[in-house]
Every structure is written in structure tokens, then in C-alpha cells.
Image 1 (cartoon, one colour):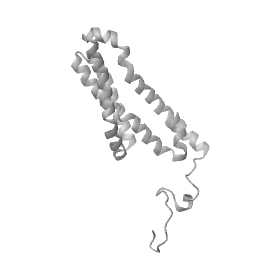
Image 2: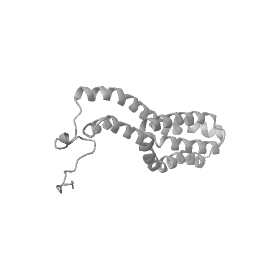
Image 3: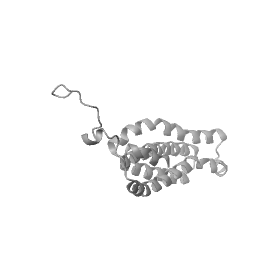
Length: 166
């Protein structure tokens, strides 16, 4: 209620009063296309690499199992420990990302993810593999939520569905 006792209509704090009755702001198509072409290709490529990195251990199984002397059980644990870290850190990552900012979190996540993935080449025991896969899960867990927040910062609600669909 206002000071005069009249009820105010609920509106978004981001929209000026003049736009509250019109609904969400629309992004002009040329501007949408320009932002889309600058933002989406890099995020798409990064996400594809994220998926490849999540599953690449399965391709290395034959050679890695013989080199490290891994049993099927140890390899399964090494593969699954990644998803344990990935799943448990999704919620904390969602709380941290808005505070630190999507760009910072995405940058840190991708650098640490690259370092963790590269360090896998130097693994000599199953315990090192477990530790690195856990670290890789921790670093990758902030990537997807960071991408979603990043897209919501670039596109208004009326266009974010189109942007996230790609």
C-alpha cells in the first residue's frame, strides 16, 4: 500500500512504471541476433567440450586400465566419483554464482576444469585418478548454472527461452 492508502499494482523493480502495464520488454530482433551471435557460439562450444570431458574416461578405459592396473570396480568408482562431486556441488554453486558473478565463476570454472583435465594425463595410481575425477566434478559443477545465469543477464525474460534452447 502507498502512503495514501491506495494499493499499488505489483511490478518488477527492474521495469519502469510506464512498462509495467505493457508486460516484459521485447528485444528488437536485430539486437537479439547480434547478442545471440556473440554470446551463444562460445557457450555452445564450451558446453560441448564439457559433455565430451564428462564422458572421455570411458574412451580411455582400455588403455588406462592396463597402464594403471585398474580393476573394473576401481574404474567404475573413478568414473562415478566425478558425478558424486558434480551433483553435490550444484546447489552450493547456485548460491555462490549470483554473489561472485557469472563471468568470474565461468572463467574460474573453465580454467580449473582445464587444469584438472590436463592433470589426468599425469595420473599414476588409482587414488590419484579418484582425487582428480573428484576435483574435475567440483570444477565442472559450476559451469552449467553459470551459463544459465550468464544468459539471463544478456537476454530479457521474453527472449531467454530462445537463447537457452540453443
